[in-house]
Length: 148
Image (tube, rainbow, N blue to C red):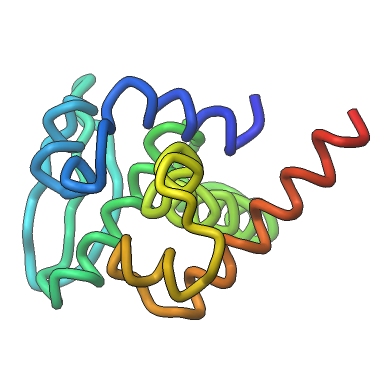
């Protein structure tokens, strides 16, 4: 399953509007425990319990990190400490993509007709460069689905 399809499936189940795009709501919906700390950000599973550890930073950075670590939770089942660097790089890129998709869901972009980067940035409270990346992803998705 493509990352976009996975995120869209999650969003369909958990997100009705942008007010649902927050750590407390999604951690509840994902049944993941969030542990705040001053050292690092990571995802781990211990005894069948999913845990996202978030380094205490500004609200936006913690939100971005939560979405990234949720990507690891939903997409990966490996321990990065025991994997080759190139494979870890691939997983990091996938988690970064997952985070952008979750932070700016296609469903809400289309529902609210957010066709300009500044509209996406304002609606989701993200920097303009992230909104531009999301537009590129939408264009790429359109190209791929057009040829399939």
